Structures are given as C-alpha cells and as structure tokens.
Image (cartoon, rainbow, N blue to C red; front, side, top):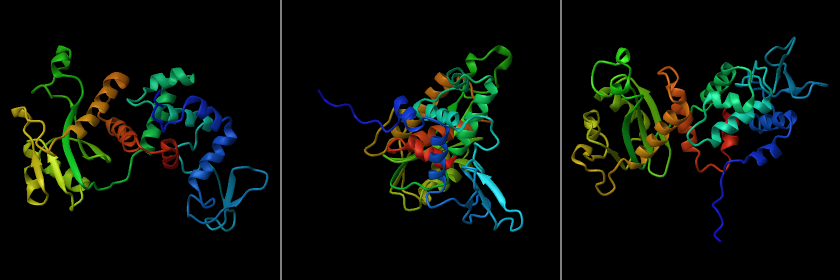
Length: 297
C-alpha cells in the first residue's frame, strides 16, 4: 500500500508531547522570541536573568537606577492575560489545523472557557499577530476581487439593501503568485483608483504577467505591466497561461470558511479573518507552521 503524504501540522498527540506543561510552553516561547539570547523588549539590549525568578529578566540600559524587569510574555499578545500559556498555544494549534477556520464559540466549547468573550478576544489577538508584513509578488500573478456576505435577496425585508445583488456585501481584493503566496485586502469599492493602487502595492514592477478578468478597474495596468485578461462574461475561463483559477481557489477557502465556520463576519473584523486565511495559505508548505505563528505572537 502507498504511504500517505506527510502532514506538516502537529497532531493532537504531538502537541501533547511537545507541550506537556506550562514550563515547556515558556521555554518554547523564549527560544522563538530570542534565538540569540534574551533581549530587552524596550531597547533591544542584552538582559540578565533574575535570580530566583525563572523566565524573568532585567535590563539596566532602559532604567540604570531601578532596572526594567520583564517576563517571557512581555510585549506579546499573551501579556496581561489570566490564561495559561499552554491554553493560548492550544487555541493557536486549533486555528492553524482548521483549514476553513474555527469559530470562537467552538473554541469556547472545546477549551471549556467560562465565557464566549474570552474565546473571541483570544482568537482576534491571534489573528492580529498573524497579519503579515507588506511584500511584493513576482512571476505570474493573478488578480481578482470577490464579495463576501449574504445575498441581498435572502435578507429579511427590513434589512434589504438598495441596489444589485452585491449590495450590502463586503469587497476583498487579492493577488496570488502561481504556486506562491497570496496577498488579500478588504477594500471599500472596486473603482479604477482603488484596484490599480492595490496591484501596484502588491505586485513587483518586474512581474512576468498579471492575469485578471475583464473588470474595467484593471484597465490602466497595461501601461506599466504585462497585463492580459480573460472574459468571464463570454464564458472564457482559460486562455493559455491566462486564468484566475488560483486566486479563485483561495476565495473558495475564504468563503467556505466564513459560511461554514463563522456564518457571519462584520466589516470591522473581516480584515483579521482575511489575514488568518492568508497566513494559513502562505504557510501551507511550511514544515513548521506553528513555529511561524508563535514567532509572530
């Protein structure tokens, strides 16, 4: 029989083995935060350990007289929390191993938290940490936009929005490199200025090709980029190397996650959910995605 393909995510048993107690979690966090020795989170200077207080250090450069004392969670999303670090790690693990996301309500049930607000706050703090820095994509890049939210015709009569079927939905624009990373952002409209600005921020100038659909918002790209498009309105989906199937696959993950796991997402928090899906997608081949997530926390 053929052996199954290796999975880069930790299993439950692997997680329990790697983090049997709080001390193991603290040691793991310190090793990821300061691989070259503990540094002061304020000034970056070398810090000295406090005698008799494990995982506590002091820096005399910040405060020469009294010294600045800090712990392993200072300056992280785990600071000022009453939850053990191991529970934070468990929530991170659950979010990363759920391909289409996991709701805060499900986190509350599985972790046994006393309130929904605790799980909701923890999940959003983790999503904030997963926001990736600005980068530029090269090679063959697909660009497309999508609408997130319920159909206007399915809304209650007193909640219907004036306009077409996309009225009341939120807009997300994305760019993905073939067999590479994706960049997605929530935008307010799909006019030429907004879409053109996003592409110029997300795509490198020496890109090989930008593939898009026939949306008029991309019409200015041909002035500075090698730009080709397909016409979905004419039932055209592939023209040689020109297609948007890769970015459509990412939209499928995002929408199925929102519809199946979260059910409803507000405009305020939608950028954080997009950042979560983007991080999971960009680290799909990462041998240790958990390590990458903790390093950002």
